[in-house]
Length: 128
Image (cartoon, rainbow, N blue to C red; front, side, top):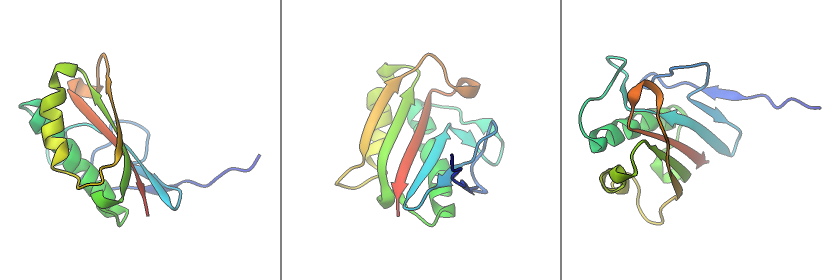
């Protein structure tokens, strides 16, 4: 069995809360780990609405994309995890401002809980 080498991407302005890479580059695809709304300056969860938390997730994801030499225009798939599906509209309002048409494919999933009490987590797949 051959072992594929993983090329890890680390972003200075994103936070990891476990033993994982911010992203893995498999050329031409870059798989970004889920980002929660942690402020990299404080290491703490952003307070406020789910919209505020969604925006921080995207700030963290943008830092990882930048470290990979990519932008939101390279994103082909997005997975959003919400602890309360009643937050869907508020998340979607912020989400819609991050991308332009044609939009990436997306799945939004309701989950019981997220790390550190976050209300939203977002992961991306991008293509070079």
